[in-house]
Length: 356
Image 1 (tube, rainbow, N blue to C red):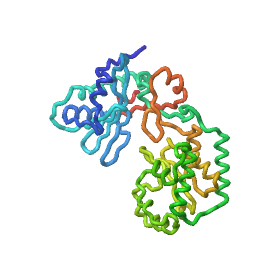
Image 2 (cartoon, helix red, strand yellow):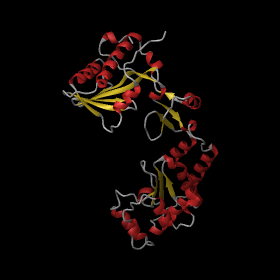
Image 3 (cartoon, rainbow, N blue to C red):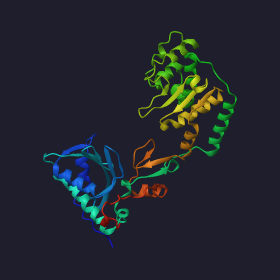
Image 4 (cartoon, rainbow, N blue to C red):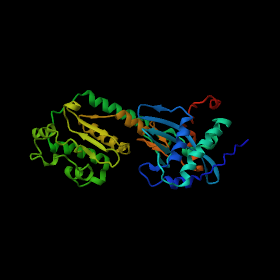
C-alpha cells in the first residue's frame, strides 16, 4: 500500500529560497529557532564536542515534478546557532531574534518534524521509496565512467620498466637551470607533441608552467649547477610554484622537482590533479626511455586510476566525483555499478520513538 506523505513544500521553491548564497543564509527568528531546537532534541546527535553538535540524517518531505520525495539534510549546532545543510541545495543559519522572514523557512522545520513522526509510525523503510537516487550518496569505480582505460598489459610494462630504472640507482648531484629545463622539455614533448613543436625548453616552460617561478628564471648563470643549487637551498621560492611545470586551476597540476637530497638526488615527478594523469604517464614513459633518473611519486595510484580501479564518490564532491542524473540513459549505463550508501536515521532520545 502506497503511503501518502502530502508535502507542503515544492522542491524548486525551496531551491529558489536557498540559492545564491556561498555562506548559510541567516534567519534571525525565535519561532524558527524553537522549531529547530525541538527537532534536534528528539534525537541523539551523530557527533558532539564542547562547541559543536551534529545531526546528520534528517529528511524533508517535498513535492518535485508531481512526485513525493524526501530531501536529506543535516543540522549542526555551533555555540548557540544552528546551521542547516540541505543536500546539494544550500544552507541556513538559524539564530534567535525577532526578524520577520518568509513563511517557507518556518514550514521547512514544521514539515521535518511532521515527517519524523510519520517515520515513527510507518517505519524507516519508507525512505527507500521516496529518497530519489540523485539525492543519495554512494561510490562507483572509474572503469564504469571512463570511455577507455589503461590496459593491464601496459600498466605492467610501465611498472616493470620503472622498477628496472630504479634498480640502476643512478644519482645526479644537482643540475643547472639549463639541465632542469631540458628534462622538463622531454616531459612536454611526450605529453603535448605538436603543441610544443618548434618551441625551445624555456618557451615550453612559460607556456605550460604556473608562472610563479620564485626567482628561478632570474638565476644569472643558467649553466651553473652551483648557482641553481644555491637558489634552491635559500628557499626563497617557497610559496611560489617554480616546479609546477603543468599548471592547474583545480588543486595543482604536474610537478617536476630538481634532483636533491629530498628525492635521493634524482628528479621527482608528481601529478596532483588526476585530470592530468594521462599526461603524467606519458612523461613517465619518456623519462624511462631516456634513462633519466627520477622518482615517480604515487605511480601505483595513478596507474590504478587510469585502469579504472579508483572509486568516485557519487553525488558528493571529492577529488574524484560523479553526479548521477535520474534519466533512462544514466540508469541503464551506471545504476547497476553504483554502490549506494545505506540510508540512515538518527537514534531517538525517547523510548516511544524506538519502534522503527
